[in-house]
Length: 440
Image 1: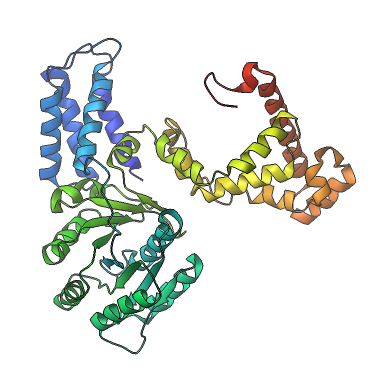
Image 2: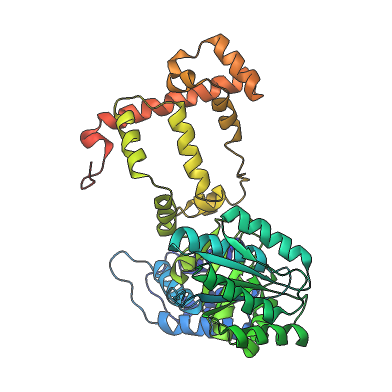
């Protein structure tokens, strides 16, 4: 995500390396390179020029203070302007009402139906809501089937009328159903087209007029760049939607949609989504996205993802075992499962400052832990709890059971033992390996 843009911006900042003061001379090439980077990322020329003009106005004449270099100062100015370009602050998401009605709109293939399932999961697990998803795409039977499968996966109810070809009636009937079943959020998945057309626009506008939605979300495929922005404008002119959802951020996206859409339609990006997994939906934070674009990582989001999987009781038990040097294979397997729940491994590592650039050409597959999981799963409960009990014959059996060579099993055992030794060393450090101020 934004890899090429990040590299181009980093290259632009090198114009200021070693300089003691920002001035007209050394800023000219930097601003020019930033503008080129934005245009190459499929940002409209007018937006790119206005953006760089603001950066130039703020940068020229700024003095370097203390240890801050011109390059660092320019990065801060660009970060602030990127944050402002993408909306400035997190946008509110309104789910009040009895029930709250959320209307989902967008072109076919933008990821509307998948997003509907993700939003239902988000509202249920993180907001404590009881959502009802509505299949209001009367033209594509597969959309009803897809939404049915997604609803089952996240454990929410779905409303559909396969023989009814009146999308407005389906939406109204669904709201009645929600009130009967005490559902406090209704999410309506509408039909999409391959391009904007009058029939499509009229239908979704009619649904809006009939149900008076609390939120209207326009779902856009971020890989379509500037075309997505143009489509958003056409939808907004007709629907006056309340927010944007960017999907497929894990794809080969240049970033034009994320950087341009707020400026063009003056509506905030509310959610971003990547992949097909139903837990890969995030609230959009402009400042955090600006940091990631500039290669600063996103520690705040990483910590939030970790906290979402954090079990305080389990963590205390694990800490006691580590302190007693009793960390075993089952504990290790449990920790792997927690990490996998946090999301795509490469995305997670990219949130650590400095790591994203280092691993940009490294293929990190989500199945990277499968070999280790297979080895541990081939152990008996006794063997998992007692790593020292693994005799050569037991290791041979584990190797056969996991489909691995004995050398791979031995290598994992060695790595596990090294990790335990490191944990033991940390326990012997002052304050048990903790930093001052941390609670025990």
